[in-house]
Image (tube, rainbow, N blue to C red; front, side, top):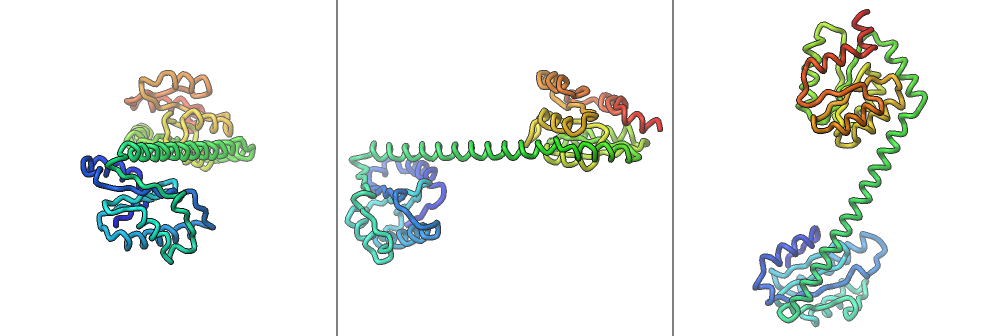
Length: 301
């Protein structure tokens, strides 16, 4: 007997498409084991494993299927399946610790006569799976959002603002932070700035996401930032607001596609000093660096 413990719903849907005409020769027992209660996950696993071992011996059908659905129910599919066999299986000594009412928890489909009912049952389980997946995704998104909000809220710490200001004042060189998730673009901007300012005392830091960007901003207190609007964890607007909250002297230039004018205008309204559109022009990047007041002070010193 073949045991499918993971992704059983998807496996079943695939097998139904493969079976087609053969489907009418099969029988299916739907065991509503999700209604059973267990002390813990270990006991639950012990029950399912004992059930599998018992049914495997009782059926003696190598092509039989035992599928554990995500909600805990089990489907048995075989040409030789019948109710007496299921009753005998649950009476086996291995399953004595878990008394089961077969009349309540088991339903046998004669697929040749109840094809529509069986397919309806499968469709119902697939819909339940989709709903569970959506709930899990919604929960994950909410948790991620809460985590991001907690992380961004740290930007309002007055100690951070003072530390950033002191680091910048005590440093004897200028720094530029490039925040861009695309590695090719990130390296291209870095290369362009390195070319223009090879003889100047300017160092360049790189960040590929918002979390790293905020950490590096606190650590390095850069004189200016090139910030991409589309980042994998936070969007550029959130990062810009977090940086401005901890450093109102931040000099931020947005990196954006030419078709992103709405986001650019929004960023400028909220504190960005300008933007460079993709594909980037090297002289435009250099111009913004030269126009940054604190960098210009370093270059003139």
